[in-house]
Each structure stands twice: as structure tokens, then as C-alpha cells.
Image (cartoon, rainbow, N blue to C red):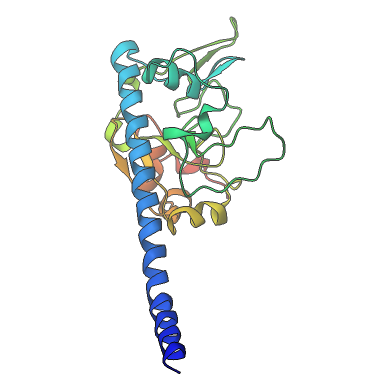
Length: 224
């Protein structure tokens, strides 16, 4: 009888403590994710200091912004094959389902296009770079072109290489990471944790202009 009472007491204590442990684990994962983005922000500032321009979304068919960040921002001359899945590139709360062994899972995406639609290479307001039709080349967005670096998002939590506000976002998967929040690093290197609703659904000017380097809301680009 005494043994059964002890077992019952232990079971009750476990039931009371497990939620606390779970919340503590989630908090620790969110803190680690914020730390990851802080490091990405430092790498971005290194590139801006050296080049006075933001990494190109695609430099060539073998190099994207993540390669430029790894090489120029972190000084790793020979990145590992699947480096975006580890270290500062991996949110500890992210859950991925690969369709193939060659697929690279991403935790963070680049504010490539701003609020303008994907495919508008010559007139986007993100950090994609300027496209020259005649030479078929891109040139970086200069640091001077970002009107408000402290209020423009550069890299944010995503499940792909782009960090975008559009209908393709999987809110359910992002919500599982940090309970209705997503961590974002801005062009000046500071990190914030806004709600998913503020990031992807809010149509007020203060929410929309954070996507664009001219610091204008461009509400006309929202889907009707």
C-alpha cells in the first residue's frame, strides 16, 4: 500500500512538472534561435562593412546569399555541403520533412523581394539585387539604398531560401516553432520576435514598410 501511495505521488509530481519542463525547453530553443539570427546579423554587417552592399540572392548558379554569408560573413572558405542544416543556420524548433536526400532544409530565408511579387527582377524592393537585362547580370543593393536599416527585415524564419509575405507560407509549421512568433534580424543587425499575424497578415503601414528598402508600405501590392 505504501509503495502504491509513493508511485501515485511520483505520478502526480511528474504530471505537474512535465509542462514546466516543456515550456522551459521551448524557451531555450527560442533563445537559441534568436542567438542564431544575431550571428547571421553580425555576418551581414561584416559583408556590408567590406562591400557596402547586401549579398545577392543568386550570385551565380553555384552560389546564393547563404553561400556569400558563409564565406564572406563568417570567413569559412570551404563550406560543408549541407551547412544550412546545422549551426547558426538551424532553428532547434524547426521540423523538416525531406522529399529527397539531396534536398536542403532551410530554417531562415532572405527578404529577397520585399512586397513586390516574385519574378519582378527589375523592380523589386527587397535585397535581391538589381537586374541588368542587357548583360543578364545582377548588382548588389547598396547599403545607402536601404532608407531605414533598423526598420527593414533582412533574414527571418522560413522553411525555404526566401522570407516572403505571401499565401504560400505554412503558418501551421512556423507556429509550431515559437508559439505564434517568428524571429527576424533587421538590416542593422538587431533581432526582434514579432507575431506571425503582424508579419504576414497585418496591413497597417508600420507592418508593411518593414519589407521594403524604400520604407514605404506599398499597400497596392497586396492581394485583393
